[in-house]
Image (cartoon, rainbow over all chains, first blue to last red; front, top):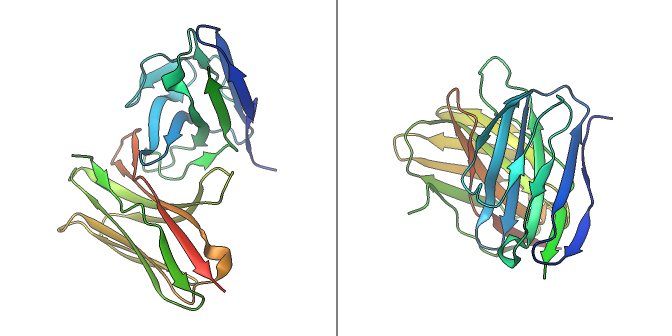
Length: 116
Length: 111
């Protein structure tokens, strides 16, 4: 079954304690992305990756890091989490297709993070 | 001003009604326009995808793009309680890798 998986699904942590949220896709997609979803603000892009070892900032990258060492995995790293990073996080993947654009994204189930 | 504006609702309609959901945008470089549906506690899933201007129909769903007005719409005919969800519009520029989402409109269809 084609899917994007995220772990953990729920996480409560404390300020400053480094954490990693994993994301994996089994569709051989070149493009992967991380979003955060907050009430009234919709989905905002944190980082994206066009392919292995190629990443770029989205609209809200501050406080986050990513890496893309393998095509299927795209972990999100919070080196020193703060309460304003409490949010619902989604990983997504897409093939770039003939358009070269990321038109159809497949989303993971989400990770609800609370930073105390 | 946000690049993409979407009324968050909530929008409540009776079963069988025609639903109209809309987004406006400011960036004329957007060429790909998508509608995603998100059920509670789930990730968004692609519902409709349109390139440039025009209409696209898929069953009870019709997507319209008016690039001259920078306005996109999603129509749902014969709405069902199972259509109750949050609907997010999304846009990408040609050759682009950044997708901008609207805030989402929460829809309730009452049986």
